[in-house]
Length: 124
Image 1 (cartoon, one colour):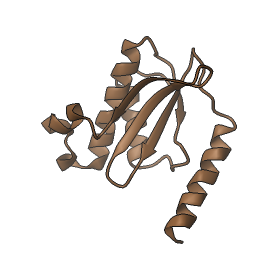
Image 2 (cartoon, rainbow, N blue to C red):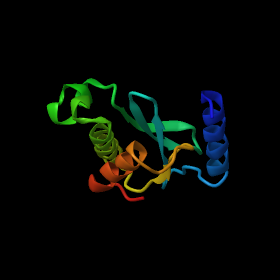
Image 3 (tube, rainbow, N blue to C red):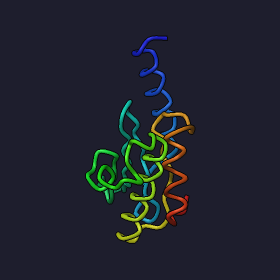
Image 4 (spheres, helix red, strand yellow):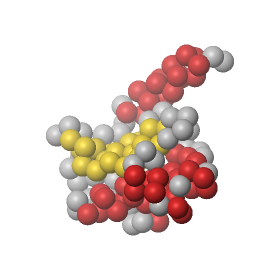
């Protein structure tokens, strides 16, 4: 299976998931994107088309903090990004979200983001 086959399969899964999952003002969508090196998370209100909160492993906050650094591993970093996105969304008054794995399998770093967000107080 080549790169394009894998990407097409993920995009196909993404379309299938997004048919059923939409973020509302009461329950926005927590979308996760995973690249080879980094992980990104956004809380999105699809009715208005607005990103309410965002966090990623690229940010200085995550990079500088020794306990969250990539030196510990990608999964620990992903968990820290989950915690950070939860804190930022709770600040904005969002406590409940719908999890959108974006076509990625619920495993590894994607799972770590959701568990980190749950531990920080976000309700799925």
